[in-house]
Amino acid sequence: MRKTRILIVTTALLICFATNTMAQYKQVNDIPYTPLSADDYSKERCKLDVYYPENAKAAPVVVWFHGGGLEGGNKEIPNELKRSGYIVVGVGYRLLPKAKIDQCIDDAAAAVAWVFKHASEYNGDTKRIYVSGHSAGGYLTDLIGLDKHWLKAYGVDADSIAALLPFSGQVITHYNIRKQQGIGPLQATIDQYAPLTYVRKDAPPILVISGDRELELYGRYEEQAYFWRMLKLTGHNHVYLYEMQGFDHGAMPSPAFHILKQYINGKIK
Image (cartoon, rainbow, N blue to C red; front, side):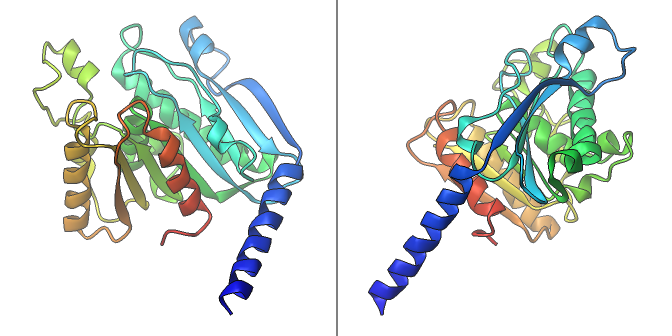
């Protein structure tokens, strides 16, 4: 009996792998998500790339925000998400110090709103739009998913996001925002720019994923563990905490993508 089950599972996995491998994928780059009247810096940064399976029907959509401390980085389609059967949207956004923090966050909200309005054009399911990102990208994911006013400005209810999947995102006020206030990276601040300020039980499902607590940046694991606990105490029933043991801040996305895909594929409930 055990051999039979293994054969069935192996066959199913092979069929799934073959389906995703044989699918034809296309990528459209540099799509602006801001008005044509935007300033030059917005026109330069506020663009997104869409990677999608051409013949899919109602495919899951992953919106991906790059890291870089809110002051560096560029839009990207992570290799780990390619050929997975998903539509992947890599988002660029304005950066500190050239932009103000409100503009960075507003860009993230504008990009997610664009995805809600256009996902169906790329065979995407608007009921399965997942928002994710690493480091600064995880911070933006949490903030626009919990503080509902950012997406509300674009006519989108943040609770319509299928899940938030932040990778090592800061949940106190981001360290580069604090730097602008003359505060060092080890002095914590929780204000209107902290996802922790907006913890609520009716938020979308949240997978909180961190690197190894001994290797992470600025106590990032402990921040996220507290975030997870506060969400649990508010009564949020779909929040999960993962620690990628043995992986530092920069290396943790690789194993974290496996968790993201397991969740989207219904293996984590």
